[in-house]
Image 1 (cartoon, rainbow, N blue to C red):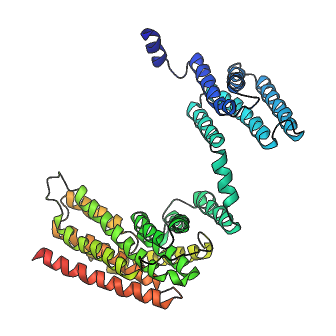
Image 2 (image 1 turned 180 degrees about the horizontal axis):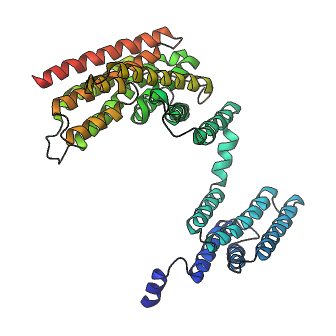
Length: 419
């Protein structure tokens, strides 16, 4: 028995017998849910269908493959007609019919060598069948605005983004990078919408911190959108942006420490105190500014605003161009100017660059730490500046004022660290 198992395990995937066995196993897998749901086509039917697809593909006869597909389609149509006449629930009959055609395709894919693709199709199809109730509940529970936002996001992320050129243009502008910021703002907005719908105003704080780990600047775009929809959420929006600052500082500190531990050069402990001041200060101010003790119901109109997301992307593009022009004007003024300007776009990128240069011996510890701090300060500043575009001036001024407090506290901590 053990010898048989070893033979099967060592059998190459290009062996025809092995592929037929895989096709049959995937058909059995697909038929499990249909059998459990007491449908006319179950385990045996689906296994035979996938084997049929595999065998017709093996014979390499296009006519046979087409004939097999037509047979499956005819059988599916008969099931669908059965559903229309009331003998079988219409939706389930149609689902079973389409599933049979998928099973035939899975068998053909596996035999043609696309094993991973076949397995993926089978697993995803089975998952769709199993999650029937959850998917129906999700679809039926969507409002018109939510459905429209989902479609808009799909267009942004899966249609426009892949079509943009993946190269650098004048002033260091990369269309995909700029558009990725638009997609990130929209994605954080959708996640924030779901969390807020579940937890109310407190959900904004969750979005602020975890969204800040991905892109703290993108959180600003989301908060500008939601505060414009619901002015009463302004205090939570301020807290979210400050928590995004905290998350950004946590990320930068983690990069500075994690990548220098165990190296020949000393660990960059000089970043702990100033970045720690940003982290603790942001959390403390967020706790102070928002009325967490009050239960505030925030009814957002939509997951995100396409217009606001595009406007934020345009501002982000201007920041990139302005930073590139300024850097060209300064020439080779040094690492500090580069860190300060690049931090307008990505403090994580500057932090990673500083750490790599430090590890490679191109920077000393003080220069690397100061570069990281300048990038962090630049990121905090640009987020505060972006809020000034909000129609809610009180919201913008509060973010700007508290950001100034954070920068001052971090500067004092940096001075104390070098003393």
